[in-house]
Image (cartoon, rainbow, N blue to C red; front, top):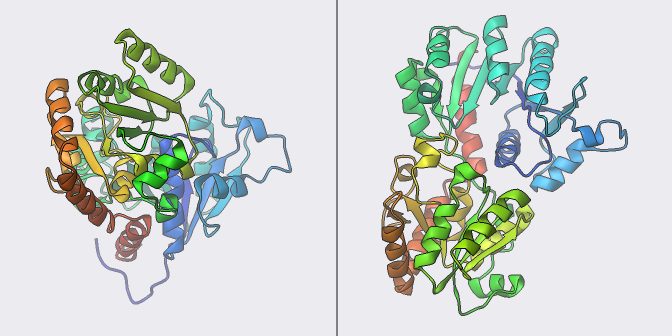
Length: 398
């Protein structure tokens, strides 16, 4: 793509998200943190989100204020709630209706703005209507939806398709395989928010705050616990590491009940499921851990395709603890075995358990790995991501 002239003014970005806000889903946090960082570094941006059913008729409800508070972000981000005939709810009908209405609004009334979205329908409408847009995804769509991406690749050379922001090189390689022009692909790893890591606690301080045993060994997982996340694999490992406590934080009630039943079937006493906690509390659990774990299985990436370089890896790194993760292509973009993490064989619980026992037995080694993890995180803030996007955006011929 050709460079801009000396005119440094940037076109406005109209970010369309069809998620429910505020909400515990990880992708909502990614959208808000990303959009806020972009705004803070000087990218002109407005986020259009749907109104949830429970607040649809409450005219006193301040949705932007609720979002700022829930996600612990500044008010630099302009948020515009959009009320249409179908509010956001657990039925997820807003995935279609909000994306449709917001995109048509952008086409008719915001002709000079560039649409930025993670929603495939919004991107599809932009292609059909000739609206300039940027599409963001973590998915390997070239592998997951080859027919759709083949259709898209034939239209990817058009000026209306500004580019695609991808969360990993694994995702980028999938898009290249689908035939998307490389010059329109931008890899931006996600990041962490330092304000979410405050106050920075010592391991002892974090355990005191949570009422945990200061002498025990804790292996911590935080995040979603749906079946496609394969959290049962952590319980399988816990069976072979009885001297450590597996602290699995997060999950819906039905997921927690499923995992409690699985642990009970194995008669395990070292699996703790405290449930979902506020974003501001997650770091306390991370600081309390000896090891932070990502389920060492291949299915989330290779079978389900719903987890590619998971969002949790960034606060894990920022916590400065040893990370246990599967030795897979996406993980290896940021994690180096025995430098800032321990990469283990996917789908091998006995080897995973052995690696955990060996790591826990060497506190000096753990300290060294933890320091390297923290060092790696320094370049992975949301602000750093926003600045990289801005530099790319400034170089486009729009």
